[in-house]
Every structure is written in C-alpha cells, then in structure tokens.
Length: 112
Image (cartoon, rainbow, N blue to C red; front, side, top):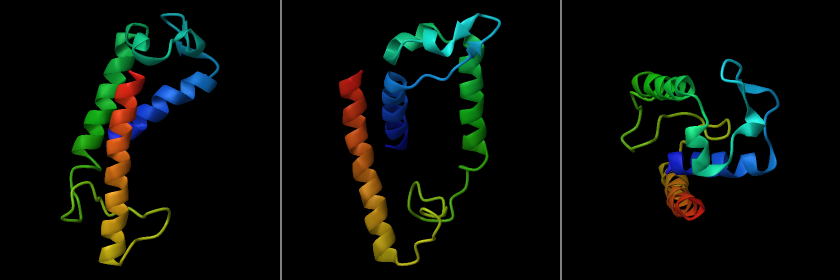
C-alpha cells in the first residue's frame, strides 16, 4: 500500500513540476526530457536504476528490518510528531492507512 501511495505521488507530481537541471550529465539527460509514466523506464540510465535498487535494499536491511510492534508495517515511528499510545486509536489509524493503500493500488493501476 505504501509503495502504491508513493507511486501515485511519483506519477502525478511530474505532470505539474519537473526539477531543473540534469538527471545524468554523462548521458546528457535533463529532468524535463524524461516522459511521465511507464515511458520513463527506457529513458533513465541503468546506473540510476542501480542507485534506486541499492537505496531500497539498504532500507530493507537497515531501518525497516526490525519492528517494535506486532502489527505489520508499524515501525514505532511518530505519527506527525506524536506517538499514539491508545491501542484503539492506533488500530484505527493503521486501518485508515491500509484502506488508503488499497485505494492507491487501484489508482495507480488506473493511471498505468
């Protein structure tokens, strides 16, 4: 669900905003040269994809490896700056996030 929510943001933001400058100076690829959606897969250089895979791998073996909670996906991080102590409120918030993730899955499928 979280990946789908990030995918929605990553799909919609380039429709209205592109970073200035170069994505790759060696390949002479500017950010505005990268098309939106799946068409970007062929334009981003291979080393860029390798960097993305390495960062995801580092996150999986680093900060996301251990969870302080029995609930999947709850890493014990603050929720907008505050820890939720009430178990009912925490369950409610996690359920909201789960439902938003499901909606984002359908949304990104529709955009693709």
